[in-house]
Length: 129
Image (spheres, rainbow, N blue to C red):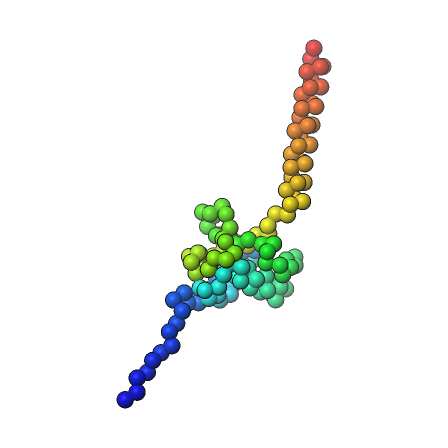
């Protein structure tokens, strides 16, 4: 009598993940392994997004994007080296990382509005006296 041994399956298994791309109305759905890293999931999302022909074109550099939980409980994104199965989230949101130039432009606009307020207040002070 032969002993039949079934191959061991990964403890993490495979599951369906839904990734909402920021600024788009439809999500991207695909199967991932629980052992896949967050970076690999981002790469798969970008590849699937491009394959479906969605616009605007996001590119293929996974370092420019961060995966966030969709429920909004965590303000920080997932660590790219973390296993997606360990995150315990099946619905995620993909957002582009802010570029340093965008941060500088935001700071400049903020400073410009402050200087405008200060100038207008100092002008009124002179006019009142």
